[in-house]
Image (cartoon, rainbow, N blue to C red):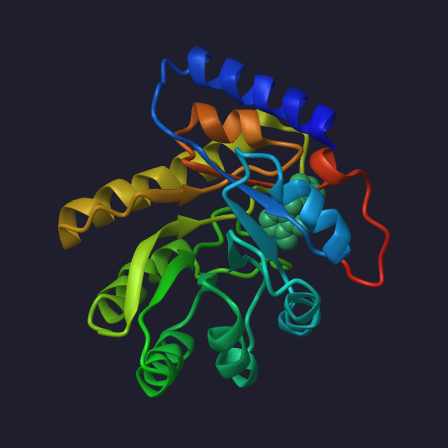
Length: 230
Ligand SMILES: *Cc1c(COP(=O)(O)O)cnc(C)c1O
């Protein structure tokens, strides 16, 4: 795993220098389907900033086996309204907020739990129907609602690139997210440091388009074997 990481890290550095960037890029190790033991291994790598999980139940089970984890856990998978409370209890950050209803619900629950929840808004920039995320044309309405929720702390945006080999299409979907965050920074005055885009197959393109957080599973841990789907 350490060697996998070193290769990924080198590719990140190359993409950064190609983009003329020297700023920090956060690394989320996508640990869905991996065991708590594999996660312990990953946490030893000092550049791993976060774990990313896509299912509330799986994360709850693993957190019980791994209560001593020292890095934060992010929910990167779609969140159903009826699992919002559990998610708010288990996760440190929720990256997949994609509706006003979910945001309001999380805000209310955060108030009851007496905490402030860091979140990202997930945008479906690829237009693929199978993907979650708010449609770009509805983004500003959701943004206006989220920034009024006093128990949510908006840290940025997330997207999943389209499933295609067409680099232009992939880059466009990332560039669209970057445009949305740049406009949102201006309209809200918030820092919004996290632009979460780029996975094992497309993280270099995402870095060229300004990603400040990549989410990598397969390249780090190896191929996934399911019960879970992507
Ligand atoms: C599974 C997943 C990833 C990681 O995908 P890999 O191709 O294994 O790197 C990243 N982001 C989200 C939202 C995912 O569901």
